[in-house]
Length: 397
Image (cartoon, rainbow, N blue to C red):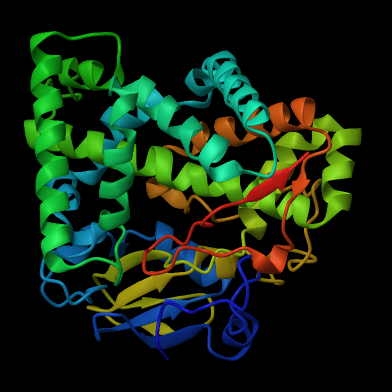
């Protein structure tokens, strides 16, 4: 079976998911590179693979690990950026960076995020409808937020978008384009680190330059540049996709939107349910198996196997979620895997949640009559990337 799987429509999951979970939860797949990997689709199996120390992301640089693409430069999982962060020590890196992404720190950003969202809505209203919510809100807001946090000029956002698209390449870009993106983005961030070292300011990069670990060791220059790259990529690309999907799935069924208009207290649980329900048929997370590991479904993952963890498929597992194929805006508890699981779950998740909740609140307040300007079946996703964001989201009000 070829991987990644495709979906029949932008807001529908791949049709293979239920059958895979039921009869073949540990499936052999062929990646775009031609290499073989193992796909996990059940909740218990995916959760274990993401959190068990016998499987890791660092092993993806090994020569026997499966490659995503046949391009020699490699994917984001074994890029120069990934290698620099792995060399720093993933646990050490997370301890040094993660303390800046606590829920408390992110809540302090809410007034600024809300003000920016209001300004973007003002601009969209002036533009008139139909308008593309991706272009007017879902993309520029996360760019503004992460650039502000890192101390990066927002004027560079078009370059970031181009670099991130190439970093997330499956088949859309050439080897030469990938090599140039890795080189240019790395050089840009290295230059920015040098500038911050000479003239530190009140931003995250400057703070990380001055920070040390428990033994008093600073982060290396290569790791500082790679950290800037990783946070810019995840901080705008992933969150923009989440915001877009959130608006799309809530507006695709008008009852969902109307329920939130009547009860704003559901915003927090609605965001969590959007993250669980996300019909995203993208790639998932890769892990390398360092020693034989049995997963809850009973299958044995052999040492040397490259595993693809489909969090989105796991989040539709009826064994873990009642009414898994339906949206329940008040669902609680909601232990979805959208941000991974265990000690290596996404450290930026408090920021993504804060942005999604804030944007949803602004849209409900400012645009109660918001609606899709096209039928849900007309929406299209970007193909050829590890992520599969919606190309555009036409809306009216």
